Structure formats: structure tokens, C-alpha cells
Image (cartoon, helix red, strand yellow):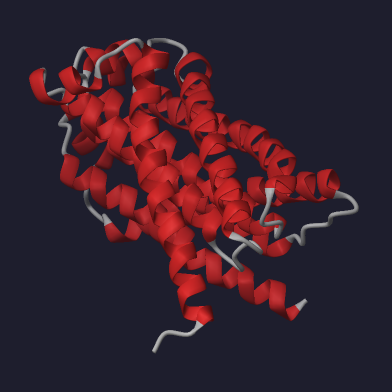
Length: 301
């Protein structure tokens, strides 16, 4: 026989799952309204793989945000639970859209990701999906970090989102600089615009590793309700150091794992997506390994 507690938890689970499906569905139609496109036409009539990849990345990111919002203890009643989850779902949809605009207008300022996706440029779709997934990791990390399971933590999440954009921009500029150095000043963004999925896959790994690094850096800083902005700034500083460490570790690991393989030639020139996936995996692996190490440092302090 089910007791009241079991029935209560079952109700909470049902509410959260239903809201998650509603949120992801709403995200699809939000894309249609804000971008002036017909998602049904893009996916089923045009068979636009680039749009599908970008949308899947955004939906996955939104799921990460909702998962963070429903984590921890449930609200005191069903209504408050629904309100809290709905607020973070709506916040996630809006921030992902803002992040896409920043990615399109600032990070990749030499061409339009949105236009390239509409032209079925799979490289652009991978780049946008990478940005979405990274934002999902960062926003969910912020929700866990603030330890406030209600709308009260929204401002701190917004501030973290803004500072994270600076880090993502820095990594994007770094990748452009590396490409230019390897190719006598050639434009990395122009190479992406022409369609090089291998370059995009390498970038995907680096940018997701960056987000995981920002998440790992949260282990080193405790959230303070008395001084939330100061704590967020310290987290930002630790994030920068963590991301630099991940990049250096990845370069070192790549030199060993991909010994005697010219990654510049394979990825940049021959568009070898197999080698690109290995490079992406190296970046993500370094971030995953560093995460528990930083947690050990935090617990030992």
C-alpha cells in the first residue's frame, strides 16, 4: 500500500517530467518565432541536418538546466514546485537564445551562423550546438552552485551567464589564433563558413571542455548569500585558470596520444572527422579528470 510520502514524491516527479516535455516543446516553437523559421519545414521537408543538430544541442542544454532546477529537495507544495521549475525553464530558453545571439554576433563575427544553418551548413550547426551544450552545462552548474532552489537565485545565474560568455569568447578567439598561426594568418571563421565539420568538431570538444572546466572551478569557491557577486567574481577567476590548465593538459596529451599524426593536416586540410573527434575527446577527457581533482582540493582545504 502506498503511503502519503510515496504519493507526494510521485506527484513531484510527474510534474517535473511533464514540465520538461512542455519546456522543450516550447523551445522548438520559440525558435520558430524568434528566428522566423518553420521548424517542421526545416526538419521534415528540407531535411536540414544543420538545423537539427543545432536544435538538438539546444534541447539537450535546456534539459540540463531543468535537471538542475528539479535537483535537491522539492518545494513545499505542488504549485511552488511547478512555479520554480517553470521559472528556470523559461530562464533557460531565454538565456539560450541570448547565448545564440552572442555566439552569432560576437564570437563568430565574420559570418552569420543563423544564415549558414539555413543554408544547411552542417559545420555551423555543430558550432551552434556546441555553444548551446556549453551554456547548458554552465547554467546548470550555476543553479547547483547557488544552492537556492527557487527564483531567488535567478540574479546570480544571470551574472554567472554573463561572465561565462567572456570565457567562451576567449576560447573562441584562441582557436582562431591557433588556426591563423598554423596557416599564415588565414581566417579560421572563413574556413568554418566554407564548411569544415572536422574543425567544428574539434571546437565542440574544446568549448564543452571549457564549460566542464567552469563547472569544476565551482568546487573551489563557496556561494555566499551575503556576498554573491564577490563569490561569482572569484569563481570567474578560478574558471579562467581552470580553462587554461585544461587547454595546456590537452595539448600535452594530444602530443602523446596522437603521436606521429599531423593533426593540422588531418583536421584543418583533409577534414578528417575521426582525428577531430579524438582531439575533441582529449579536451573533454582532461576536463572530466580535472573535475574530481579540484573536488579533492576543495575537501582538503
